[in-house]
Image 1: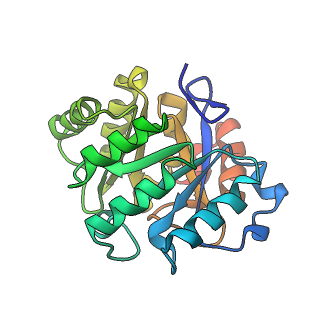
Image 2 (image 1 turned 60 degrees about the horizontal axis):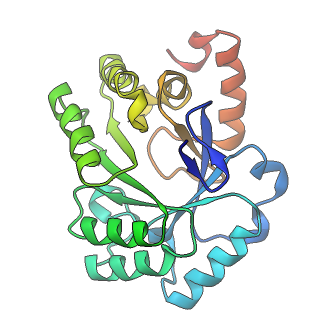
Image 3 (image 1 turned 180 degrees about the vertical axis):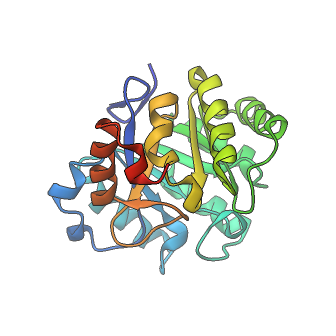
Length: 241
């Protein structure tokens, strides 16, 4: 059984709410109860000193949701340019106090972050982001293999969709590897449907946000809930597919 904190993965789609450095009192219960897990984007923090990070995580943990923490690299969508050495120091700070960490599988600090997470008995998410295209199927298969070999318990693939065929190709990869703990997302306008549809075909969760998106095509938490209702009613044309 795969879990992040007390959340069991795989039985039904989950919602991950991504946040940056915001006042913890803005995370009101009415919004939080719509999500299952929080993703903390530390690359979006203005203050990345240890004391500030620990204080913020402690405040957010009181909200009751398990936390995935990441320090996204600039080239894979991070908000700021943080050196590899500084990112590693941050991962070492957060590994003991969150439930999971997310590190890019192409990162130079990959092995050290995986080792740190596993030493603290935390879930390891290895991610791949491509904001220009959806690679060929052979490349997507290679990403899955590489992630598993590198110690990823969950493999996340987020690629830009130029057309519906790109969306369907990534959907096929998610469905094919649904027993291997996959999170798949098609980025961009053409890929919006993936944030609703993919979790029903094997992707473990979908991402949402409160006030501003962290990736192209992301829906805020209220729109995601409304669109999910439309999907349940089988009105796919209403949500752009």
